[in-house]
Amino acid sequence: RSTGKAAGFRAQSLWTATRAAVCSARRILGALHASSGRLSVSEIAQMHGLSTRSVQRIVLDATGLPPKSYGRILQFHRALRLLRDHRLSPSDAAYEAGYADQSHMTHTLQRFGGLSPARLPDVTLVTLRT
Image (tube, rainbow, N blue to C red; front, side):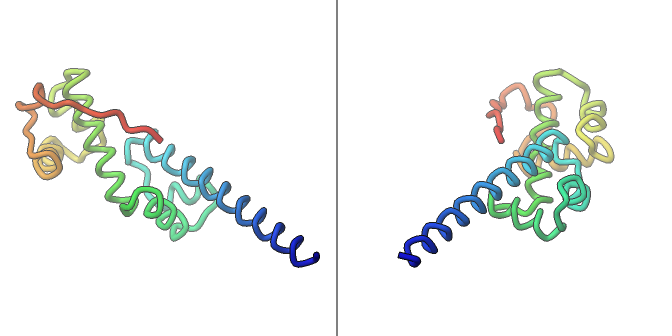
């Protein structure tokens, strides 16, 4: 019977660990979304009391992408929304989305979406949820 108790304890511990990991992933992805991908891995790690390696592993496990790549996609998505929904000028949208300058944003739009700021009225965006 002690084997049954031990197995039950292990299952409960695994469930608790899994639940904690899911909560941690949600908090970390939520922070990335709230910042539109502008927080660094070290800033996120410090905010959540984790190592940078833990943050990298959690984001990779949850999204299939390294944090930097995931952050770039979020930043790209924010720029698209600013241009399309808020009708900001390309230079204002680049600034608000956290790009160094308009040409950096334009390059990213081209690389990730094959778009230029002039072609945005044709784009349909999907809402990303954490």
